[in-house]
Image 1 (cartoon, rainbow, N blue to C red):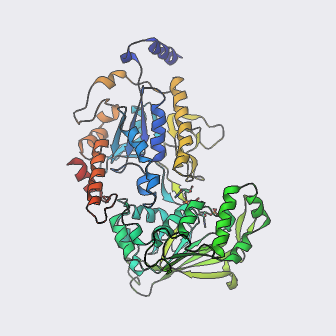
Image 2: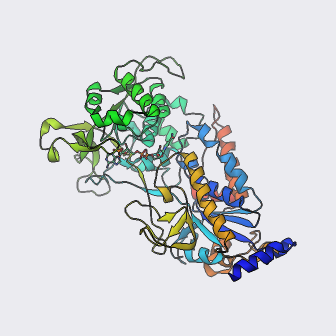
Image 3: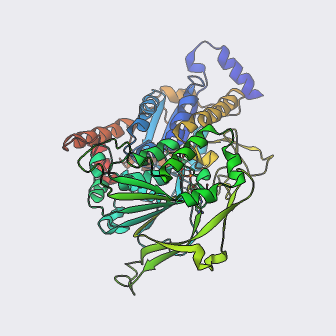
Length: 539
Ligand code: NAP
C-alpha cells in the first residue's frame, strides 16, 4: 500500500528525476531473452535491462543452433541488435550466472542472490543445455553423440568446435544412424549429406566444413519409434532433403502401411498441414520425387552419392560397439560404435496419444529385431533444460521452471505462490519445443506479468540517482548496481574479460572480415575459441 501511494506521488510529479526506475536482469541472450527484453522495454521508459551471457557472443540458438544453410532464419538478429543498442540496455558477456558464486573459479560468475538483491526483477532465459538420454548402455561410446553436440559443432560453439578431433572422424564414417524424427534430426541429416560446396559460403564453422569435405558418408538412416503420421518434422525441412543434389531419400511403403492405424487416420482429420506432410512422405515412398528438384545443379546431379532412409516404427534396444582395435585395456580409446540394434514396434492407444510398443519383449523374437550398422550415431530425441540451483524451483519431470504466466512459482503444486521478482521465459518455461517465433507470444506473456507486477508495486523500485551518477571506474556505464560493488562483482568487472555489446560487435566484424578472405567469400569465419574472442574484443 505504502509503495502504491509512493508510486502515485511519483507519477504526479513532473520532474523525471523523481520517477522510480526499474532494472531487469535477463539471464541468457537467446531469442526468448531478447524478445522478453524487447517487450519489457515497451512497458515504459523507467525500465532498463542488463543481459548476462556465459559466452562472449550473444544470440544462443540463433548463432549455435540454426543451421548455417538457413540464413533467412538468422535475420531475426537485426531485431535483437536493435534491443541491445537501446540506451536502456547493457550486455555483460562472458559472465555465467550460478547458484552461488565461486571466488576461485577461473570463469566470471555471479550468483543468483547477487542478482536478486540488485535488480527489480530477474528473468531466467538460459534455455536448454542438456539432452534427453536414450537410457541405453553404450551412449558414451566413441561415435555416439547428441544432436545438440553435433549442431553446436558445425555452428562453431567454443565448447564443441573440436568434437571431430575427439568424438568422431567423418573420413572414416560411412553409415550414420540418427534416432528421432524432429527438425533437429533433419538438420543433422541435411548438413551431413549436402554437397560441401553448397555450404562453402555459409557461416558454418570452418573446421566442420573441412571435416565434411573429407566425409565418406554414404548412408544416413533416420529412425522413429512411431509411425509416419506422428513424424515430428515439418514439411519445409522434409522437402529440403528431397532437393539436394546427389542425395536420394528412401521410405519403405510397408512401414507406412503399418502406421495407418485407425487412430492415426483420425489424427489426420481436419489437419491440413499434417496431411500435406503425409502426402509428401507417401510420394517419397513411391520414389516419385527423388531428386526431382535439385536446386544447385552441377555435373553429378543425377548420380546418387548418398541415401537418406527414413525408417518408422522401431525402437533402439542396444548400442553395439567394436573393441577389437585401439580400445582394449585402454580407457583413452572408448569402444567405437558399430551399430544399433532396434526392435519393430506397433502403435497402440487412442488418436494423438498413440504409443509405440515393441512387438517382441526385449527383442527376444529375432525376426522383430535388426542391427543397423553405423559408425556415427546421433541421438536427436530432444533437448533438456538444467536446474540453476536449489534456490530456483525446478520441475524434474518436465525439466522446466514451474511458473504461472511467466511468474516463477514456489513449487509444482497448482496453487503455488509466486517467487517475487523472479520470471521465466522460452524453453525453460515451456520445454524444448517450438520455433524461434514461438518465443514471441511466450515473451509477451512474461513481459506482461512483469508490467502488471511493476504497476502493482510488487517489484522493487530502484534509486533513480543511480541513473545519473555516470560510469564506474571500470568503464561500465551507469547505473552502478549493488552487485558491481560486491567482492565477486569487483572481481568480474576488474578481470577485463567481460564482453560488452560494442566489444561483441568487434568479434562479429572480425568474423566477417576473415570470412571475406575466403574464395568464395564466407558470410563469416566464426571464431571458435573464447581466448581468441576475448583478444579480438579487447584489442
Ligand atoms: P522434437 O521435435 O520434439 O522431436 C523429437 C523426436 O525424438 C520425436 O520424433 C520423438 O518421437 C523422438 N523421441 C523422443 N524420445 C525418444 C526416445 N526415447 N526414443 C526414440 N525417439 C524418441 O525435438 P527436436 O527435433 O529436438 O526439436 C526441438 C524443437 O526445435 C522442435 O519444436 C523443433 O520444431 C524446433 N526446431 C525447428 C527447426 C526449424 O524450424 N527448422 C529446426 C530445429 C529445431 P515421439 O514423437 O514418439 O516422442
